Length: 306
Image 1 (spheres, rainbow, N blue to C red):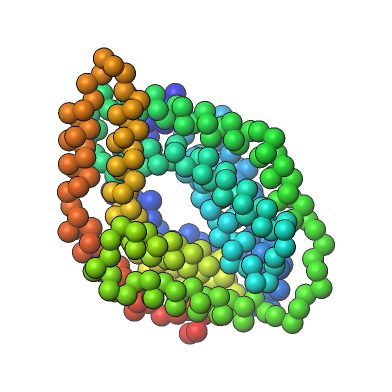
Image 2: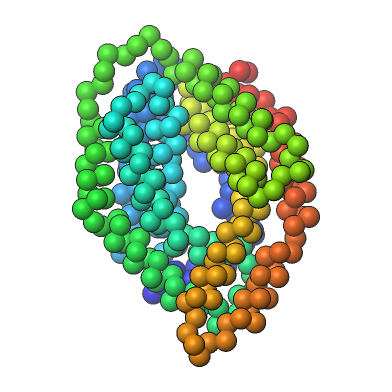
């Protein structure tokens, strides 16, 4: 069974970012940063194994999506805490998470394109998409079941279970204020003159917002603030608006891949041209949505300074 045989109909272009993830639980203001990272990595590792099992056994779309989310969260956690916890083991684990996410990327990108970026996909394109999705899924499964993944899995287990180093006199709330201030400042700098941005600058802003969103989610429980949830939700909405514009950039590659995967007897040019036109439409609407989300984000109260 293919991805798209089990895909529900999309409920909206931005449903991937429709809600904020729950803040990381189990962390206190006085938790040491190294202990916090191990706690976060343990949770991400558990999610990775859970959704990897789905990918290996079925074609349910949520499997590949959540597998890649777990890998991205791992990379974000290692990056967030790099000033407190570093060394070759951490760098190696982060690099392997990046590699695995990339190996799963083609499957997820095609799924997003055919189920969220465009609507009313012609039967011929859907049929070609199913064939291409099966190829991408086999590729992801190979990466998630090979010796390299097994070594990565062992490395994560060892990292989580390793005896902690003597804790420096640094609390998680103090560490969190510094890194959240840094990520917010970077996002604000990258968002200046937003209305003039091209695809490359929008992409750079999206990456900055994504890192801020992960940081806020990981660190929220270190702050007893009711402002944490609305702040995270503001970053989610902004990331969704930026993602909708990024989908348009990714769509060009997806259309090219579908054209290449077509058989000689399949006249796919006309339906792909129609989908390309659909992708190009709505630019002004997406830009307005982005400007509203950016305005809301800038007004959101910093929960770590509340």
